Amino acid sequence: MAPEIKYTKLFINNEWVDAKSGKTFDTYSPHDGSVIAKVAEGDKADVDLAVSAAKAAFHRNSEWRLLDASARGRLLNKFADLVLRDSKYLAELESYNNGMLVNMALFLSERNALSIRYLASLADKIQGDTIPLDGDNFTFTLKQPVGVCGLILPWNFPITMFISKVVTALSAGCTVVIKPAEQTPLTALALVALLKEAGVPAGVVNVVTGYGPGAGTALTHHPDVAKISFTGSVEVGKLIQQAAGKVNLKRVTLELGGKSPLIIMNDADLNVAVPTAAYGVFTHQGQVCVAASRLFVQSGIYDKFVEKAVEFAKNRKVGNPADTAVDQGPQVDGEMMDKVLGYIEKGKKEGAKLLTGGKRIGTSGFYVEPTVFADVKDDMTIAKEEIFGPVQSILKFDTLEEVIDRANNTSYGLAAGIFTTNLNNALQYAKHVEAGNVWVNGYMMAGPQSPFGGYKDSGYGREAGLNCVDPYLEVKSVAISLPKKF
Ligand code: NAI
Ligand code: MG
Image (cartoon, rainbow, N blue to C red; front, top):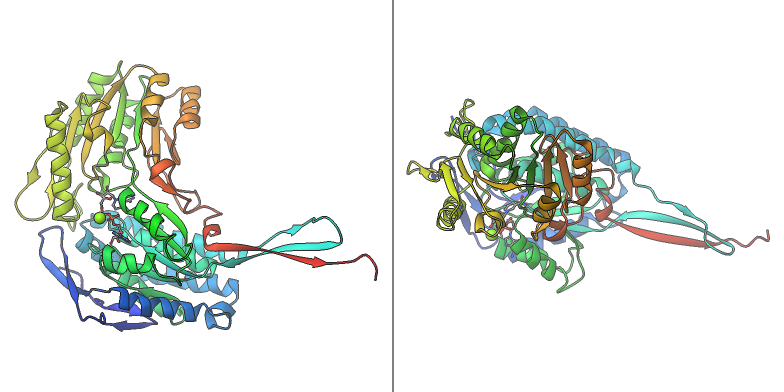
């Protein structure tokens, strides 16, 4: 049975409101392409209202600013309790609107609640230094929230991304306006209802659903927004960095795409490496920023690896994400499905060897077969551009020296992996690969405790980890003249 859709309006100053224009947009089920709700289409007028509510909530005398840091942490822990209480509903709604396997959404619910608790625990550990300044001076630093933050979310992990950005900003003491992705607005609205229930004061958290050009651009150009945090495409990341310097000087955190290399050395345990490499690229239909989308296999095991990888892909069961026996669900929408199918055609045309998959499944919904290409060359489009689909591209290499240069020969730098039992090879690779996250003999090991983000065009700044609140803070040096005479 489809989960109930409780919220479809904008959330501004703790109230559910229609867009000023009265407009709505359709949101879909990726399983069959049907319209499941009409959601308020926010625009500049609505963003202006949301930002002014967030600005008022940030005033030095507001309830939020006067709250003790530890109380802020406790309030966010209450939010974690509510996310756990509603975890089944949230997982079903995520699956319904996004196409994420319900199993995966349930697994992530537990992890998301732990993330909230970790991030909440940072609230009362934000503290400055005392500094030995020359002369008769006593100096200390204050770390203070930057102000109103615009948080622009992607559609691939709507709940996880909401939590990572919103809870970090709130833990730092900021107020926020959230712009969920137009494909997946529903869980953001369900989550903000839980923040209200947890007792977040009016204006601290606002959600304006709508499109990128519209709600998104209004936020990135707003003079009263102090910071933007964005996850999405490199193309839009660049636009955001430009917009951030147009009207005022916004601080920016960008978490963008990747073309992450995974290296399989001759000495790797194939019983682990084959399924992990598959998991690295097929998980969540390949719609993962760290997807292992360039799989470099050493020549000594290449043929054997390819054979096993094809067998693994062929055994993946594709179907309705609400079915707990399924391994792969649909792509998020028709546009993304067509993009993936377009890359597959390019791969074939440019001479990569298609060994399994390659086609759409059925005619309703946005399903793509698990696809494996071998004999992929570095200059082929499928080896260069982010596909964001269930497409494994296998390339051959001879030496680690050679493959490190090839791995780094990209404008991306989000993640990287290596399978080897040779410690020196693993550490040399970890040292020299240009990526913000490196995994050895595994893939996608991550959590709120560990910094996450990209080198090069994969982003700017880090999320998660002990220092994740820093980009939401300003540092103020206070020097007090303290003459020795008294
Ligand atoms: P996108 O970057 O266009 O959208 C992400 C978010 O940015 C959405 O909320 C969107 O409404 C907003 N947005 C779009 N244009 C904007 C603008 N000019 N100003 C402010 N906000 C704006 O990504 P899209 O089109 O959904 O996906 C395209 C590709 O991006 C994917 O195929 C994938 O390669 C990559 N991507 C990477 C993600 C990641 O996790 N790093 C997540 C989503 C997409
Ligand atoms: Mg886009």
